[in-house]
Amino acid sequence: MLGRGGRTQRRLGRREILIFLTVLGPGLITAMVDNDAGGIATYSVAGARFGYELLWVLVFTAVLLSLVQEMTVRMGMVTGKGLAALIRERFSLRLTAFIMFTLLVTNFANTLSNFAGLAASMQLFHVPPWIAIPPLAVLIWWLVVRGTYKRVEKVFLVASLVYISYIISAFLARPDWSEVGKALVTPSPHFDPAYLALTVTIIGTTIAPWMQFYQQAAIVDKGLDSSKIRYERVDTVVGSLLMTVVAMFIVICCSAAFFNNPSVGATTITTAEQAASALAPIAGNYASYLFGLGLLVASLFAGSILPLSTAYTVCEAFGWESGIDRSYREAPRFYFIYTFFIAGSAILVMIPGMPLVLLMLVSQTMNGILLPVILFCMLTLINDRDVMGSYVNPPWLNRVMWTVTILLTLLTLVMIVSTFFPSG
Amino acid sequence: MDEDVFSLISFIKREVRDAEDHEVGHVQDLAVDLGLQPPMVTDVAVHLQWTDRIGELILPRPAEDIVLLLPWEEVESLEPEVLYLRDPHPLFQVVSSEGKIFARRDILNKQITDEEGNRLHRVDDVLMRQEGVLLFLEGLQVGTEWLPAGGRIGRLVNRLRSRYNRPGETNVIPYEAILRVDEEALVIRT
Image (cartoon, rainbow over all chains, first blue to last red; front, side, top):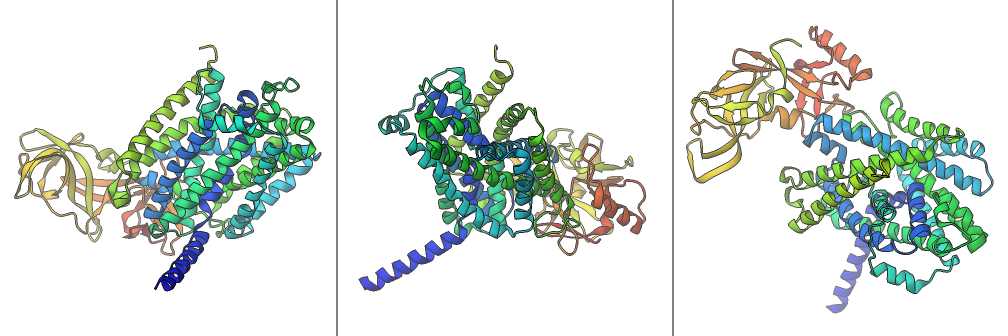
């Protein structure tokens, strides 16, 4: 009896693992793309300026990201619709148009920042942008449009392994692990404006509005329904944790190398490529190259997913034909948005003197404006029994999420005011 | 736009008053019979502030914020800002919403597809024509003043309008082109 039961359990285990492997993807890819050039820059700056002090924020953010993305998973699997479609059907054209416009601007600036990351990482390997960017832009465009998305998804999943380079870089920078451990479990919030701004930026960079649209669309595209919800939850939580672990190692690496290091002015680190370059004399060329390789793959990864996600989301919101399985004649607006994002970013990033930092600042601000709106829409939708049936939020999750939404709105307002009126 | 034609978006939330001129709630939705030519509004969903009866049924205690479907015969008159009912609150006739198609719930914002399932646009507004106290479905608006539809859908709408001999509004799909309303999409004849 026991033996038979054991075999049944083993078979069940194998079957469950197989189901999990087929479901695996949306959560993991969304989280991995989140560690894009902007994210890497933010974590680098956090480590360089505040040492390990902001590590606890990443622990908090990992929990928050898992909760937000789990709601996305539930909505996608229960309704079989993307978030843009649900917002359009539940709210109004005006709100949808506002969200889509903001998302277009934000995602374009994000794509641009990834192309800037791409150019910078190639420069670390002594390849100038005007040589590197055009073929890489064509590769990104071709990979998604001419390759099948399922194949691309597998390529991206394998490419995620490159993020291990940040873990190796962190070890090469020789951090004080006891300090790291202490900082992880001991929150040390204070009200220094720079600390506060960086806290909001970390949360805003990590929980970006495009992620909710992308993951829900990917779930719908994969045809996953509510019967597989627990597997997709695992995919999401694992993705969020891995993303946070990578982010933590970037903070640890930059903290060990630059924080309190008199040979490097911590405030001179403002971008990921500066961090990669400054690593060489401190942690060695390997650490610098590994950091740069991570930036290259992250930028490529996000530079292709973000335009694709935006094209799908906007087309879904307005009801336009979309999909890489469609021809240009069948889905002209979808291809226009996708191509415009890639071509526009590639051209802008090669123009000398382009104020990329300002554009990224605008993007972060618009992200900050959009996130509470998206969270409000998501919370309204997920508590609507007409939409979600018995899959509505439990009361405890509502309390947590409404508190977080209000808190994020307030913090974002503080950040916007302090960004544009620094003396106020 | 024709004076007798108005948009569903502007009609929703219109104040509802009873036979004694008391404000009782607002318009929530309209049920449309697509089998009729032209499709006619057969019922109105009213969001009542409160009620203690539903048709013949007396409730054990008053219910607040309740949406009831009233047959169109309950409508006494349609004024620009107010919809007047024939009976005093709460003595309204009510009907079941089973099997009905609602303009707001089932048509507004819905994906429009052709017969092959190709996505064309979403329904940006539903236009109604008023004739006396009766309402008829005029068509489906695609594109707005601030967000024109243009392109392929624009050409398709023009073709449909000339096919059904409907000059005038260029961004309105005539009701004759509606084939059916599915759960996922509204299918039109192209």
